[in-house]
Image (tube, rainbow, N blue to C red; front, side, top):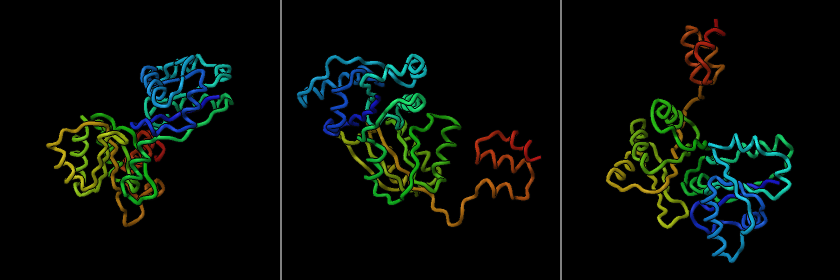
Length: 268
């Protein structure tokens, strides 16, 4: 059996009894980073007077998961197998999803233990009352892909949630201001840790505040959605427009992500 175990995102006391028991009983632990996991178990052992001896550790992360999966068999999961990422919930902007899919495809029993999660913690902390949100993980670091992704978030009718590193946070704030300086945003850094802090204001006010700040720590950013007065356009609306096929193909390409050339050939 495979059990996905969430680990604390800062405060060690956020580990659950179920998670500790799963880690104690594990014979094989897949880890995003074996060094981080061994250090974490050492802290748990000291804090809660537990023993995590006689365990096999194997690295499983975004750069080696394909190769690891090729070498797995159903017999591997006759043991008590656990997967942990470095911090937080596996599969949420962290590795682990391909391991779950392997279990689904091979009829292997698996379970997920609830636990620490930066996305939901920040959402609850933000005070935003929107019932739907979209989680985007980290934006691309630079280029047109980053600009396009941010514009999609800013134009969405759903609350946008993303992660950002300290050395790109000011750049993100500047980009948001250039699109809509009045947009309300919520930021929280170092969730559950000693220097946790949060801010909620217009993008411009926060950008001005942060320009002279020494920005440290990992950040979760929530961006207020765009409130549409009318109904948003959909694919059928575009198809019904009486416009030139080439223009229509470009619009449909924007909505679907398909190549403009392929759509144009279908239209004509």
